[in-house]
Amino acid sequence: MEIIMIKHFYSSKEWERRVVPKETQLPLKASDVQGFLLSALPHKFGPYSVISSYFTSIRSGPDYYNTLCEISLYELNQERDGGVFQFFIRSKKLTPSLKLNELNDSNEALVINGLISLQIFKNYRGATIPPTLNIVDRVVHKKSKEEISHIEYYEIFRALRRAKDAYVRKHRDKKVKSSE
Image (cartoon, rainbow, N blue to C red; front, side, top):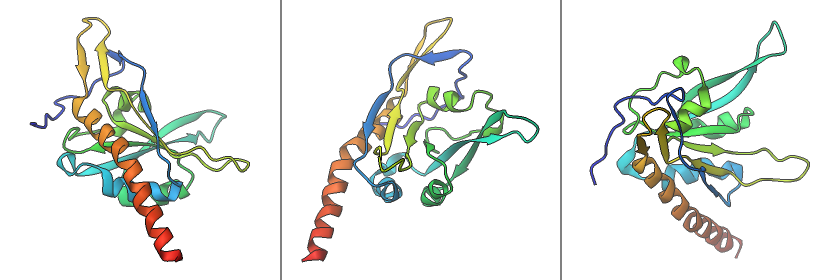
């Protein structure tokens, strides 16, 4: 299968979600997500980066704005430890150019372009929600009704969904052997 690079970035002013996002939970501890991604992301779409998304307060008032920052996969745990819980997985092969400072609708623009949303929730009052992956694999043009499928990003999502159980089994077996 030939890898098709995105020639332009789809704007949420012109494009909208065609389907409900597909979701899968990762049965992993938050600290294990980085290692999982490093081992499970398909090499043919690499290299990868992660876009962190968090809100920053405006000093002169009560308002907030969304801050986007591109980091390497190796920085994911550090960014998570710093309080960020919303990330987007980017294939640099599929989305070769990205000007985060020019996005006026931040997260929605990333979703519309097929990037895979990764949420790593904090432990809250003893309750833990497993890390979650989401993807919107199809979008439609608001006027022309032309439909675009993010086939390659969906392939990455499916590969991660398949790899999660094998990753958990492999690491659980290592823990069992080391405790014997």
